[in-house]
Image (cartoon, rainbow, N blue to C red; front, side, top):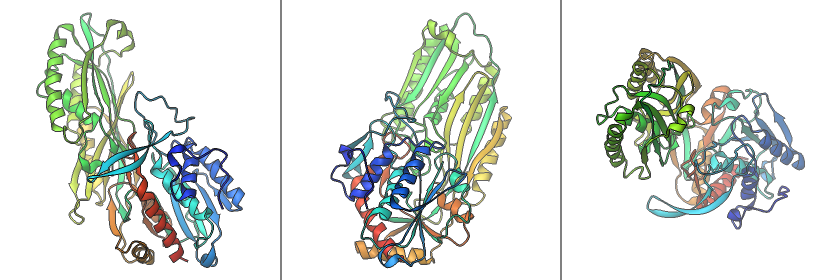
Length: 506
């Protein structure tokens, strides 16, 4: 049964298979769905269910559950849960005009090179695509809507606010799901089944700023870092990409610079706790006579930094400019020299990137830290960093050391947004069936993986006793960035696996 779609399929999707999956993805990309503002998606899902005659359950956490009947051999089977999240990361290029509260995502096809191969991908025009997790939600709907497939009764669970706080998953009532088998469609490499994920927690540091008056001969200068790839702070942290905030801190504390008498006006960068910062800028006050000296120092430091990332982040741009006097009235006054030095020294001591690698799984990051956002207002500067780890106690141990360093500089510390990891289990009936299903379709063994990112599986496994779960999906690269790319030719094999596994679970 296909759903009513009042608008024609986006040209970028014409001819792609499976048709129902892409129709559902097209419908979802038209609906703004920032975290905590998924009302449009909920309304759409409820409408699909009403037309199909399915049961709909919503809860206080913003989640929506659609219960569909089994088909073919699966009519009388035990139910199967399929889970994805409704929200998407809302990031865009600075020069792109897009209102994530109102505008649909605009699609385009492109070609990118991965692993030495050119692949056709689906992207957006200068914004995140929303394939994380729109493609998983579309697949869940397509499975239930496509006639002629064998599958058990389905419980399609669409959670809210995954990208910011996982509040939807944390708010799931343990009695909401009747199923004790769950497929999560939020993984991002086809041909792999994920059995484990990292936990995480945010550290929020806040400094109170003591503003001075600027001196009559002061000039304002701006240093900006931009053009970086960014990426998912879990999945992409292993690639050692440049973090704009870390680059900025490195510049401000570089050996090539003498910041004696230079005072910070503002420092801002990054966008989200779970994204590697792509841009940052700092405004400084200094004596006008020192502008040329500072410019030369930043030039030398910038050359060194750019060379170190030339092969990883070749788009890195570092700019220094003196701001015009007519802009001074809009620039915050300088933070005292003592406070400026104290904050910069504390920031210099914060580690970013991979902290340790797993001793058990080659190539898997065990513990990492992402300097995610820094923001300045009139009276405060705020830093948010997210640590992740699959090792018990590692996050707490690392962040306690950060806390001591930051508190010594006068910052107040708060921890937020903690979520649990998910421990691998290799002896479940669901996994054995999934391995057999994959081999039956493709004639080869599926790879079993762990992921250094947060999946809602960790939360749901803690909340729902006795549930078995696995996660898988098609290839998505550079999620959480405007370069997000869904590899088109991985969607069809992902779908074939979904269909076979659903049939084998009857």
